[in-house]
Amino acid sequence: MNDKPTGMFQNACSYSKAAGVLNELALGRQSSPRLRDLCLPSAVNAALALELFLKTLYFLEKGEDFRVNGKHSHDFHRLFGQLDVQRRQKMEAIFAQKLSNRNMSDVEQMERASSIPVPRDLVGNLNSWKDVFVRCRYAHEPQGRPITMFFFPEIEDSVSEAILTLRPELTPTYLARLG
Image (cartoon, rainbow, N blue to C red; front, top):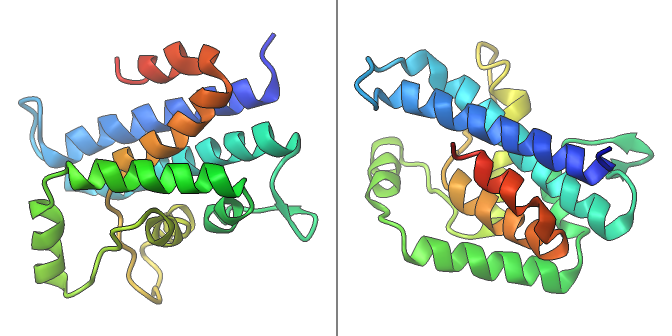
């Protein structure tokens, strides 16, 4: 029988895997035609994965679900701010390290084309990503500020590493999302 954080983590891994599959199809990799209409569903699944990874971490730390004013909330930027300070700092350092090793040409190209800056820090990215899953589901409706959706793997790895430090037995589940 799985405990709640294990189930949350497994669901997060499933959404992550779905986001990856949709993204591969959207980009036309693996000898398939490019299916651009899958970009938004990929981003929504990625945002759901991030939300569940962060909620798993919150539950592991606090022993309860994340709530705002007594209600469930999707604001994982706010959730991140309520995590242990040292754990947040470690995740921010992991994220910064991952970005320092990343080829940024795709990000720079998008920034030039759109004139929209992409945050280069974990907190800034969480703030950008927090609305993706709500706003992209309704992309047909007028939107306010633009959303930047970069660095999903780097964010995911930063948060997952924190979870796996607390629950190393979840490592096979995390690695299985790749296959």
